[in-house]
Length: 303
Image (tube, rainbow, N blue to C red; front, top):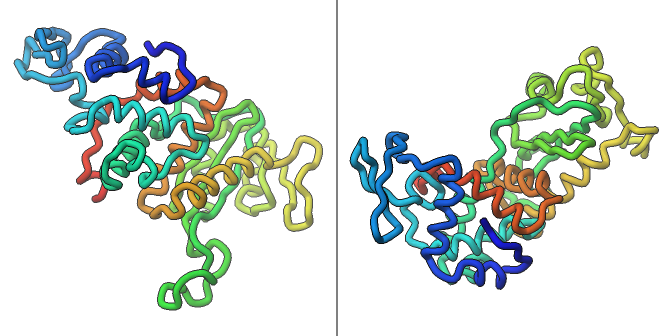
């Protein structure tokens, strides 16, 4: 386990060499017992180099990094640990250009490292729907039409019609779920609400007609932003609006631009950090280390 630390300097003191990093990944990955990443066998032989192992059943030799986000990496694990500390503890993440300078690697390498870490921090599945009082809202991500080059403008386009749609739900008790969705149609919004919010819960939204149509399934309350109404008793969407402010500052302030293709990865990164905002530095890093299973190749990432 990590010792407590509050800075990148403390992290490097905790992991002075590559072997200490290997031992730490091993401690987390095999916290429930040793296993072969190829066949799942628990019959694992150790070698004296302390870095490689061999399966007693399939006979394959492997390192502790096989089957994780660290597989096939040529970077020292100390640099990976630095990157993990930076992305989990900077409130709005870190840009690949900045990370490249900090780690003394190319921007392309830094970009791939960050996406592998986002792969570990993905929020694709949940155990149970949100309940209690839940705020729901959509936001649009993309440049303003008036700021686009003439040959990239979409005729007669207005509002968010030509932008990517992000839908979010946040429980007043604290958990956030957000994702990039195909559109903001009634069918899409209803499917997402039913999949993420327990029926009978209090649903707080703006005056979007699609949400109002769910009044028979939820205790629905809406505020009319168009008329300057933002709070009425306990009805408001201030929590989810603050989430969107954080997402926009991450995208526009740190990355400046993200493609629609990878937008969901950035949304998942923000969601992961938001849901662990009460944790200390050590806790966030340790929590991410429990999720490192799953190899992400560059070919899959750009396909």
